[in-house]
Image (cartoon, rainbow, N blue to C red; front, side):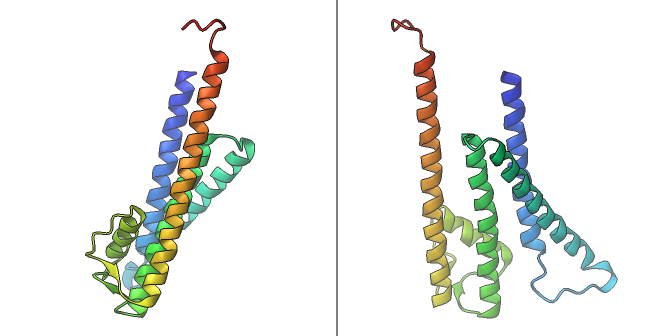
Length: 182
């Protein structure tokens, strides 16, 4: 039983790592600027982008199939939320980067994809260092939407964790021997 749990934990960790890697491949190699395909220069970038998209699709399909089999699996629900967070962070970062490309001046301090990803992660963590911040209306609205999403995700993770703890306590109480002996 313990070996199965270890394999399950390793599998979940591997899938979460793959989700992050695929999201980063998608994010950094999505051809937003004019991509030049001279002498294979754009082929590795295009290949990395395709691998990222295919990996995210495969991981989402795998998690949906697993959830349908056991909809009460708490750890699975947490992993599902983490996959959604990974994908949404990627898309918010892309939106912020494209917004700054198309409408310069929307952000102060956002110039690269890494800046956009950094801003998204700092906003997700509700840290707000201030080195990159929204200045324009579109950037402020998008940031408010992300903050609302982030608060919802935090609430969902707390609810899932609380549900899991209560479930574990109930199970432990049911398995306790009669008479109060420990």
